[in-house]
Length: 241
Image (cartoon, rainbow, N blue to C red; front, top):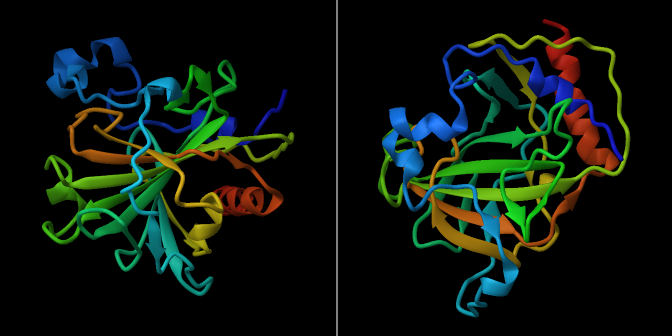
């Protein structure tokens, strides 16, 4: 059984809204879309899926960012997200979708497996989302967020097979932002981008707009030393504040 430092990293976020105390089962009372038929995440039951040979591999462009560039890491109140430059984009979809941000869903001290999507009922240690907006039609992610064709998210399921500990007691305040060096975001994705699950869904947290074209890669990512080094780099920067 693996323990992973990022359970601490995310469990210590201090929120600026009430999503942390609003139980998921009651979201729909305040946010009606959260009770909709397109609500994500889902359990991907492979025996019910149908192979579609017409679906193209995902193409990722300008994902190899220079270490000379700075990216902004911020807390939006219920998650830590890394802002990405819009020159990063993906192809293979009906529109051009430009990158906006990436974030992770990890476990907690009481729940080791923290992925949002599951496969045949299996929950993974973590899940990464790279969020893109339809830049053919909309000026930015804020405008696109509630549109039916507004967003496209690449989701990577992550397995952790090592124990990593860090002594930094991170407290990441709401609206706090720090700058970190950019890196090759492509290295966070699986080697093969032509094997994935695809469905029309929603944002996984309120307001749960049914605006997301989900691509969940079939091959999960095993957290490698290079992957972990990127994560620890983020932690080191947070420890300086």
